[in-house]
Image 1 (cartoon, one colour):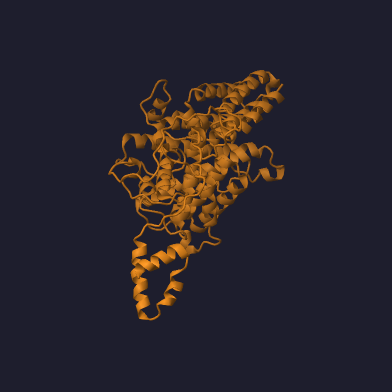
Image 2 (cartoon, rainbow, N blue to C red; image 1 turned 120 degrees about the vertical axis):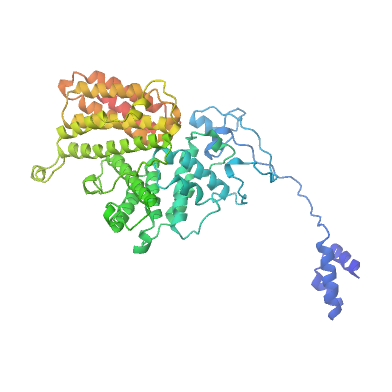
Length: 516
């Protein structure tokens, strides 16, 4: 009977429920179960479509590394439309990876540390997120924004994505957004981190993080540092994208929580282990530097001036290795430069302050500011002095990067301080020329890691250089114009690697043309 039912289902295209009408009663149920078990074990033969679907063509190396759509030209030529628009060579040099599930061989992927692979191909894939965290640790953490300890960064999300309603998930999405920006530009010291990684769109992580920002943060939740870290990282992402509206929004949310929690004053902190105290200190000074940088570039007010701060620098401990101690020395030195930069900004803006308000301004005089800068440079440690010696290749990537960062920040602060004191233009021109000689020797990867921040600093040096050349009856105008043109060429050469460089280079060229 079962064989007859099989034949009827195949030939008459009738459902099984209708066939069982001819066999009423309990026996039909037994017959149904027997038939279902045999049908389930029988392979189903489906008709193939007349035309097989064509597999998508393989993206070129440039589009694959940046997550761009690889548009092939209609006419038969080697370069894709995307590479032609970017003005880069279109290549297909990366190895072809075999499709399908890989055999689970221990140690087959060192970057994933033997953790189980997930099957989610989207931007929330655990494997992709794990790689992005390592990219962040390799670049932005080492060079600019160590918002949390390295052990916490590498260990917290190793087992998976946290609950989407918590601050930890918001922080993770913010970290991935900033990391994607670096990956899309190939701005990593270790190229192995990019192998086999299809970089998602950074805006996906940013939008996901924004959707998880709470409308209101209660008193108990405000003590969670992850909210402060997240707002700082979202501000970093916005600055690098050139979205100044979002930059101010997330810096504003950060400062609101600082006021609510008293992060700016250590005496208001609860009893904490010293490791957590150091984490709070580094987080505070990281965002302070970001605030001063954006105030210098965009001209906005400094929301939390250094005169109202009572937070120490993170400790240097004997347990640190020599390289970490050297990096910490450089990090503290750059923070000192940013504190001086804040006063230089205030002093320059004070020249335009209304006379009735000058009496309330109690900042250091320009002469005092210049003396403080001289003492800071004179007290620079031998370790930092050794970094700038020609041919010194002994330090790590992050220390070599910090050398470039120190040179840029020193030049910016020195020029602004000299302008405050109305020093001779020759001194400003000499500093700018020495700075250009140093920065043009830096490798490309240092600019790519610095991204828009170093572009902003180069643009600021060009602006101030031409402003200074207007004094002394314009005798050094031609020399200043030549240096600005050199700056413009340097920045324009970065336009394929740093998105903000194209516009900044054009602005420098317009400044040079206006100086005639």
